[in-house]
Length: 121
Image 1: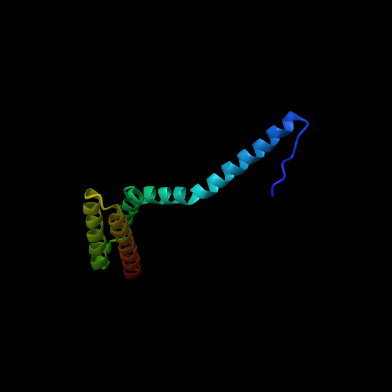
Image 2 (image 1 turned 45 degrees about the vertical axis):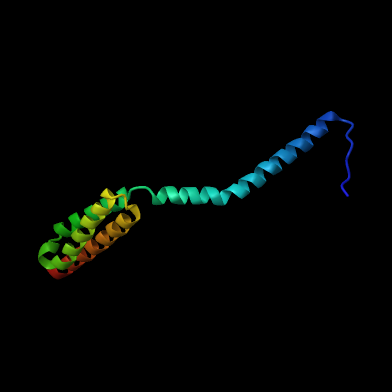
């Protein structure tokens, strides 16, 4: 059984309505948070992996600067193959696959650079 409070001052009614409005807003916000999270996640996943592609290109460039084509050609070739595949995936709108291939290209290029620097010394 709910008890109804009678107010002598009409301004007190407005305060109660304000509290209910704030509570309703907070409940609605809390309920919509998972949906907002999913929308942000989908938006990020559907964006082209520009940063990953750039990172992979820079890593390959650094590997070449370290003369990886001479000391670690197999790793450098692997990095370039991954980058080429990432570019093809990007053209076809396969952004998640392109992101994975670009990340793999960067990793292979880093290994090529490290191997080349270790071998050169």
